[in-house]
Length: 215
Image 1 (cartoon, rainbow, N blue to C red):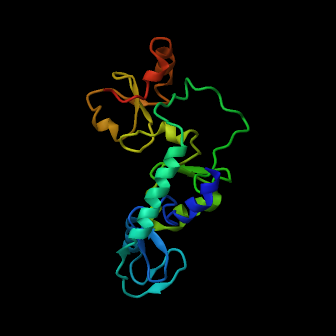
Image 2: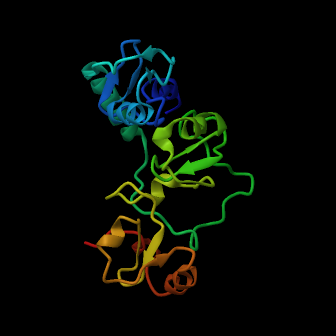
Image 3: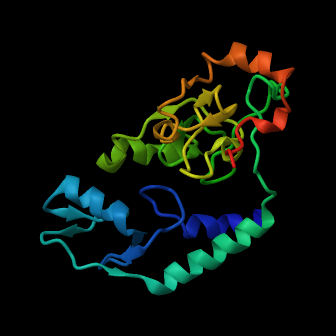
């Protein structure tokens, strides 16, 4: 995947730092996710600034979807996915092997520097440089940050693309906060609160059963 890293940066939105989704192009020639730019300009108001080069537009420019870039991103993501090992099951921290004390979480944007925070909305970890837009842009003001999360892909809920932060003892599975709606008749607890239960369950059930969606 190393040879794809420079291309990954070129195909990423400088606002959300993720691969472009429905990219649009500004009159100054810069590309952003359509939703990211719309949210930024909605908060910013007139005059409208390009988030990348700070070009000024007194009237909000008419934006059009960049269909060529959209196709390139889709092909890149498909190639990237083919190179990644499957991550169907995540082992809860209580049962996972202890990480090396020197191990660090890498920045998901540059894949080089150590991450300083993980964003629970972007579902990605960022180094100090690539985290800066979360502080500079109003579009990220409601994005909760926490210390870097290891094995983020394995800890994501495949249904809602959010971090699994709760454990449902009734179904013996780890769930995200959106899953709580489906488990409203259950008694889920945060993973930290459920750590004792998880340790107890370790000897009573197959370790791979936790965090799998019920059939």
